[in-house]
Length: 299
Image (cartoon, rainbow, N blue to C red; front, top):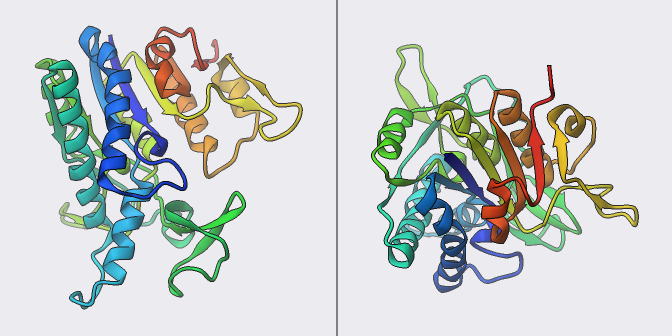
């Protein structure tokens, strides 16, 4: 069975934690422990978020007096892919002796995507007030706090997809498309150039799973299942649902919404099973016995 597993940001850094390397490496080790059984028994492709990490690099760039201007977000995304990919492949190798490799991945987006004019992707730390960050940043409310947002265009294709296919077919556990992939656009001559954006990791994971003809897409987070009426006294978990039934409900745009959208996209594209749930339940999610299992609506 071929599985694409998308690690949420909590797999690397929980809200309120210092972004120290040692703390993140501990989280990565726990993620590797949860994923190793799947990698031993199946073809596994891992992707991950990078919101806290790319936001931290952006802050460091803004405050670095040696720079005449900050590095753009495509470059920062590449840096986080290398860092987090290194941590993951090292943990998978040391923990389980797996043949694992990180593939630096570019994600093609449309240069005319309206998302460039309407930033929506949360990155970096949270602030108590909307005036607590850089004056040129755009901040939006994230729960009770405020957080920077950047453009998040729709993923349209993965440049390194043939390389990823080859590595998976050779039995390698692949870490790729981290942070949604490095956002690039094509010019009139077909050349690629990076753009200022952060692509949604879950939507890229759905695209990756579809194009790899994966059997299962796992969207791993810190909640046991998607909840109907989340945050209310009437909240209840949703366990087995069709894409049509799930799309009829509304979920927070900045958190569960993209995961639900990604799961439904994969199911509608013919994927056998998409599941949303806890990282610790990864094996049970892949078996369809835990979390929220999303299947294609019957024709």
